[in-house]
Image 1 (cartoon, one colour):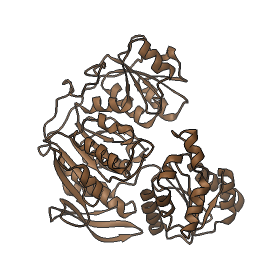
Image 2 (cartoon, rainbow, N blue to C red):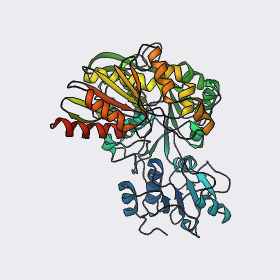
Image 3 (tube, helix red, strand yellow):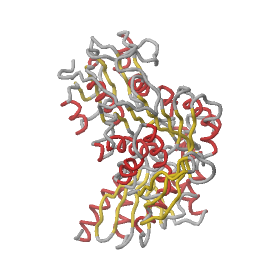
Image 4 (spheres, one colour):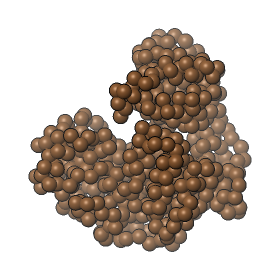
Length: 501
């Protein structure tokens, strides 16, 4: 059993513009069959796949509440070492013996299967097993939950929100699906009343949450290996919006037709944000420098404040508007929000600069959806003004590539050269794998007039780029897999062959 876990009561601040919520220690309304109704000090929770970003964050929240935490993962990491120092008992590798006899709950990450030995052992021992998203719902139930959803932009917007609330002194807890250096990682435990989480639509996992404030950034086709079509995705987002009580708030992108469809008929108050039309929150663009925008925020048509972002891309103006709306309702002054947004430098693998050798800039990004690719490449071109822009795109999932093939092929218009390695294989069946490969995407990009090249392995891509790129060029590695290795490999190759940085 973990030792050293501390009991520390969380305290909130008065926020008159947001409805009341259950006090700390109150029995949460969210109850899943067979699991404890509340997670209190002295209980023991075992976490299978504890090394994941979200799981680590949830573990930290549990430890802060005085819950004993144990867990297992495949490999050691610096982040796990920090969790162990906080009182968690972590074992490497997964075996039935790792599940403690005196265990109140077992939590598994989304990647852990039903036949995992620890999951099997827990069920045989009559210990309830839930998914990570269900745990978030329990933890959110006695906080003021802020859940940020959308097909893309979730991580950046969740990080922005947590950063601004922290800068304003509200000390939120948060769980983000990306590392954020300015926040000390992808999760944090604060003494404030707000619990800010990235809400994922895959597997409808966000339906386990208990938000008082929800954000829907956009709704588009994605995860078509799980959803039948766009209509089913819209229905899922509608179900998410209905989780917000009638005295809560849903903030939705007023320029996204399917996001607006998702909030039709819900009980909670709805506020819209965007650039055009009658919106509650509107951005009036004043100018930009290297793709970083300055804009005036209008609330119901009235000027509120001016924001100057440090991260590029007009899509981040929309993200910042959503953050402005959330934080105003949290009781933060407009100028304080504007200052926080200006100081935010982004989440990891979101146009993250990796280095520059011999005048060649190398950047890494997580984008793996056509819309993300398009806006990110455009933002990178505006920010760096490269002589030539190379994109190394690793498609993520064969099914996603097949379903969205034409959209992917049209996403690289602002790139000069696109290099495509083999598709990152995850979740798909072998049958799906046989239906499409990276060469199909390359051919489709070429048919749209693009310069696309197929290179199956990272080593060959690094070698070709190292021999070809020149001073003033920009290379972006993009994808949700391990394509970041190309960025690191290219920098090493350039330093070794060109002899200077």
